[in-house]
Length: 169
Image 1 (cartoon, one colour):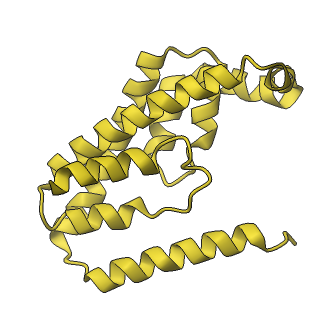
Image 2 (cartoon, rainbow, N blue to C red; image 1 turned 180 degrees about the horizontal axis):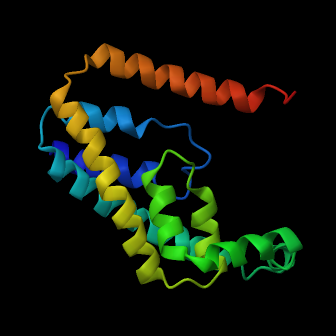
């Protein structure tokens, strides 16, 4: 039951709304590390995230067909970004997904560059599995109190919302 809930949380936080939602999936992963081996969580989390990324890919691909987005795609900066991504799409995706860098750019550039969905998902899994394995492994080794995980999540959400609401300097 708990593993199913973990799958659904992972699916949601990596889904189409993820760039808009301030989430702290790492805290969820650390919490579940109390109940399951790190490799199981990494495997389930990778499967859920890959499914979500397939949906994200299809949505971006669909949106790219609209006239307004097509016009943006023809812009110099977007063309440059697509060309740069296309030089090493697998490794760019895998490294960005593994790192703490926000992954919205590769989510958009992969479909815009016509990088095949199967290869994109392989790169996502290649980057996501070791990331989740490391975080879950840390959670197995270091027992984080639930109150600390909740406080960290709330603090992260508050900081993210405040940062978006406050005017830029």
